[in-house]
Amino acid sequence: MWLHGVSVGEVVSAVPILEELRRLWPGMRVHLTSTIEDALVVAGRTGFAFESMRFLPLDLPWTMDRVVDRIGPDVVLISETDFWPNMLHVLARRRVPTVLVNGRISYKIAGLYRSVRPFSVRMFGALARAFVQTGLDASRLASLGYPGDRAVVMGNTKYEAALRPLAQAPCDRLVERLAASPLSKVVGGSTHPGEEELLLDGLQGRSLLLVLAPRDVRRTDQLVKLAGERRWPATTFSRLEQGLPEPGVVVVDELGVLPRLYGAATAAFVWGTFDGSGGHNFLEAARFGVPVVVGPATRNFHGDVAAFLSERAIVQVAGPGDVSSALARLLDDPADARAVGERGRTILTRNQGAARRTAQEIATLVGASR
Image (cartoon, one colour):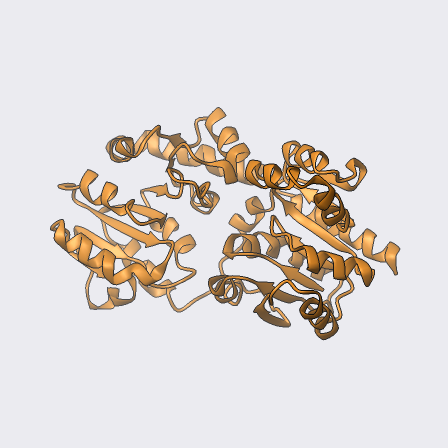
């Protein structure tokens, strides 16, 4: 089997499906490709045993032929959203069933491919099945010429990924050290340049631990310096054994640590929700019953945010200037903060099963193609 996931989130969301498939086929070997190094690093820490992990080569007919020859897949899974025309064409020509899993068709992608519809009809038509998150994803696929009887709404496997047991890791000891502090802890998850200042300035003067987990860990030194310029004592996560600034800032400088740090949080803000990135995965924080604040730009999780908002299980702010006040309200009212977080965890546990349903459909499809 060959799984392709463009980045970290897409790879992680596919793991529950792979685990269900391995229960059905204990000897199943899975080869992973991605376009992002971080995704391969995090994949190695999920606890799922991949046969191989490599970068996806350039999307050329002969390079894709070589990948298929090397892997020899009986089925190919594309996680969420990353479509390469030559890859899909080669797989269709060689009659390898290709399946979209946990499919997400954004407004941007739909608009792009709608403008070249004859091309998109052929490309998406190479998918034997499309197991998508929502009815909106299915309707957008249909608008691109994909046959409606081959698109199935399954739900979002990120709900299951968020509840997977975390494999033991060397960083656990440092997470426990941070969690043991009696101070409140605010986690800024997947921060982008320019966003950290909002927390550093907005929470200035509060006696707490501010944990900044940049989307790009190469920005660590820059953020430690930034915190110091704003008179916050600061250190990096990997140096916590040398001392914890209380109060102060901890900058995360290791991949795969953020989901564990949410477990120590009093409140969290998940970034990427003010710019064009569409937001990052807030479900990892909801797992621990942590109240989450997000901005308005949540297209990657629009349906999920709407569901959480309908049950007051998340806090959404209109603009960057509202972040610190929203977090302050949660910090100043622990009972309400706990209630928000627990409602979020309830929604998370209620929305399980997409991975199992998807795996069963894949097993049926592969069995029929043999």
